[in-house]
Image (tube, rainbow, N blue to C red; front, side):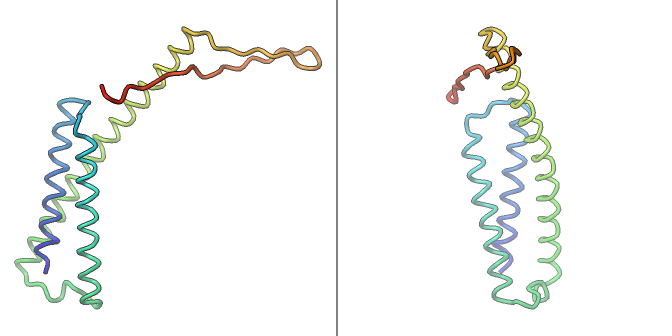
Length: 141
């Protein structure tokens, strides 16, 4: 009963650890989309297993679990928690870095193209606005 739950937790933790290790070596991973998809599938499987267990035994599904299985479940939960904390931190840094790089590219493109719009108001005032510079992103780097 809990074997599938523990298996999903161990698989998800292992995948997160591998992703974290790869991201610390290189900021660009061509297989990042596949890893994210696999993580979503494993998280869905985990959620489905917990929902099934609660549905089959609505009171407390842990009551029917022996101590050895409880220990395995606790270890898998701790490993998943630790792996997800590290993974979340690394992914957060990657997202921040990407946002900073995009802002720097946009600022440089705007500086180089000089996109600035000036309009005259009805009372003779001049208002200047910066127009965002057009940039394109090559997603197949």
